[in-house]
Length: 461
Image 1 (cartoon, helix red, strand yellow):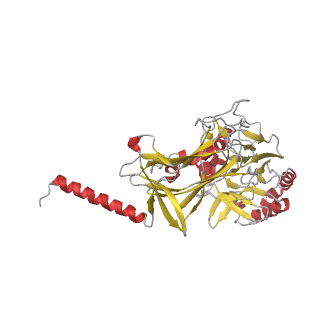
Image 2: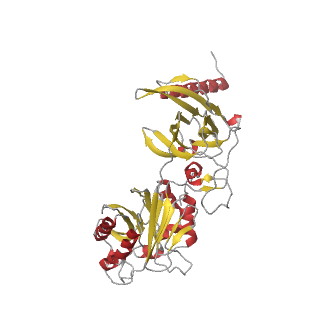
Image 3: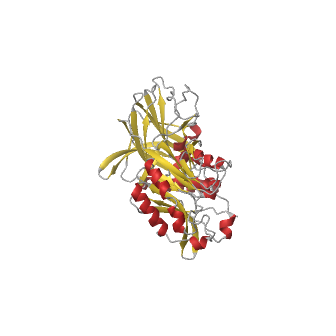
């Protein structure tokens, strides 16, 4: 038998296709193909980019589970979603939870997402109650934009997305969508059937965030500098603060010494000193000091807790000219720490000039960013809070009348919640970490940052 070149090419393509199919069959070993559960259907924005939809049952740890799958063929950019509707009661709270497992996706946080859309009985989107933030006019009710459940856990390759939501007063049903977007060739996602149940209204998560506005001018030793903050910590306690933020490199300020001369180990004298203060006053303290680690020096923010222990430290990652010329080394990590009220990240002074630092902290779950800062443009303080929808708490040496950085607390919309006017003052802002901020045409923007932010591959010089 003689084959021509075109026939050989076709046979080779069919062979590859059969091998790819065999791979998918192996990957789904133990799975039984089934029809979609009642009420579920697959759809795509355009038929020419429609991916493949399939449902199957699998045995997971002795439990039979139905999975809703979406996968691409050899083409890139296919998009679609499984969807269903559930009845709701306006004004009631609901818990949503679903798990996903992806294959062949370079950017699963963007490609495999869940959405909830509130609707009336006719299928129209509804309005949200009047928000409390100042960006809305009185009586101005925005449209209830889609909710985006956030990833909360990854285990055994499965990512759990979850959220608690209040159904708008006019809502009578919710559209649940499980998406596959802009997939790479042969990429896929499996979704479990989601949990959607009515719950009691969640409790608030109120936290009081304090900042100290002070220049420790007296003394020339680290001990003398630290001790000047004792009355301010006590005042923060009297004002029922949960977290108090102190300035940058406070053991260096006004000493006339070099960074090397005031540098210390961590744990060390400053962590022990502020740890005792935190325990005596039952709160968290963030303080800026200089760290020595062998032959290297770092500009550091420490976080100590109400048990008196060091919770963690952050090494400043962006160094200004003066610190570079003084021989300091930049850090390279963006740690976020669990506290009894929420997740706290830290940045230091010059970090505020660069969006990457606060963004990396927010990626890692920071709800509050403590910011010891010598000086910075106040517009950037607002931007760091606004672009990430996190609370930013700054403590600075700058005079309040200089139209420069302030010792202040900034809210999700970038506005200053409270700011210090005089040196030697302690100001406190009370916020609810469970309360999202809604924007016109966007809704809860913070929940959309991960699903929507672009992929950035930094060019190499």
